[in-house]
Length: 178
Image (cartoon, rainbow, N blue to C red; front, side):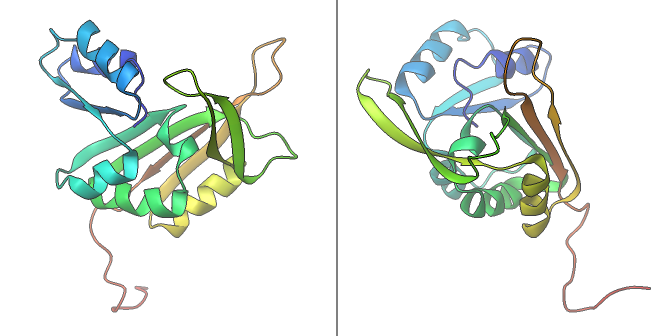
């Protein structure tokens, strides 16, 4: 999700993994389709993450976002949709920039859109610990969230989160086992 030019997706696909890459930008999608047209295990789709997940009934063993859609999508909307599309035991992993101490929660980000026009998009800024709490809240287990320090001379590190779905559905009506 948020595959941009699909460099990572094409790397996986060239090694035999069947990959569906998704990006919101028609410019990025067109470029990626041109660059990776000869990679048969790679399908490149254009669309918004939540809409795509709602409109697709395919399940996956893994869903990942590298500085992509997770950062720019309300996790209370996105995480349940990801969980619906993951196979039991499936992995959801994502990364994005470290959150500065003063910026938490939903934050506006200003810049140029795909056509070069000034635009504002929201991004969700949380610490690694808060992302772990959000993942647990939406039924993920074995959550590991950390912040890798920035390389020397750079201000902010990279948050990386990995979470799994339980191997099988949990029956909430049966109560705890002991």
